[in-house]
Amino acid sequence: MELGVLEKDPKRNKMKLTCPNCKTIIATKDIKKVNKDSLFIENQCPSCQAWFCLNKTQTILKIVGISLLLITSLLNIFNIKTEYSLAFSIIGFIGIFIALIITFFGKYDAVKK
Image 1 (cartoon, rainbow, N blue to C red):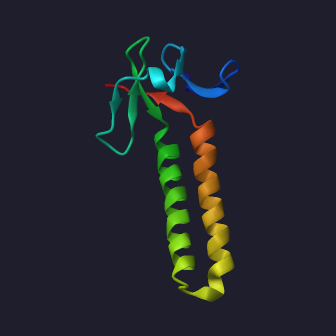
Image 2 (image 1 turned 30 degrees about the horizontal axis):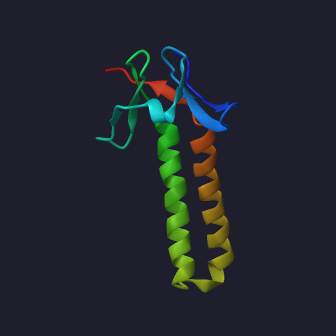
């Protein structure tokens, strides 16, 4: 099983998905069926009707990265432990950096149903 990736569309300069099942390049606006019932959001390929989602480990890392940014930002805003303000800022930056990298370069796996 190969993994899907995001590809850049040279015509519109927008990101597109590649279905890990049929290898079809899909524009995100063409995805009509989305399953948001769990932590792992699943999309259905309009070409082959197979379901796929972001790699589960990467999804968890993305959520942890966003949570790090949120927690450290709140600690800095409310001046809690001000002597660690720089450390909180660095940790928050690392968290959002991880989340952005996974968002743009994450791998998609086919979902077995």
